[in-house]
Image (cartoon, rainbow, N blue to C red; front, side, top):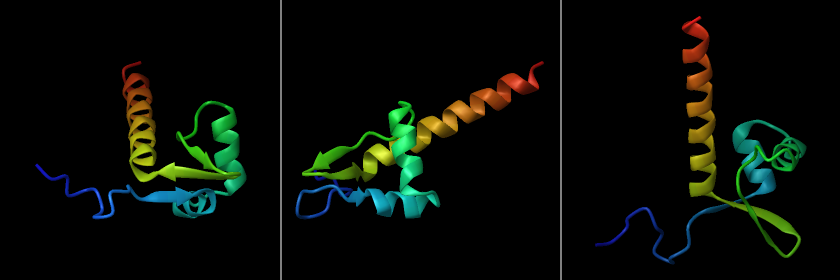
Length: 78
């Protein structure tokens, strides 16, 4: 079975730090700060440059959404 989410070259889409920051509407420093606090998306380095797999960013965003939904559900139950 073929995975259609994978490009034909076999590489998953990858974002640079500046591309990720632009997509999220934040500064690159915000991404660095979140990662330093253990709250940012998983990434990896290619040389000195930080890169992020789109699937990791999607998973991270889903976790943020789930966490936020739980906080709001808990707040409404008071």
